[in-house]
Length: 89
Image (tube, rainbow, N blue to C red; front, side):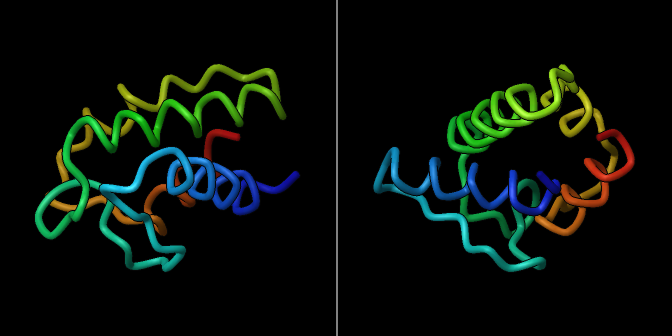
């Protein structure tokens, strides 16, 4: 399964698991940083679902929390996530 499909499955799981936040499947959707519609608990929830789905498909533990939260950028979008994962998947 390709990484975009895994991200989309994880977005659907996140959106269906709660009703306070919604992640839109647009490359410019800001997940983290200035302009994000998600709070810290929501982003952790989403990344946990994504990590689980990546592991289920590839048996790789990517430690997404550390990879993403240690970045020095002001914003982190869905496109940034996809590029990060393509380089590590």
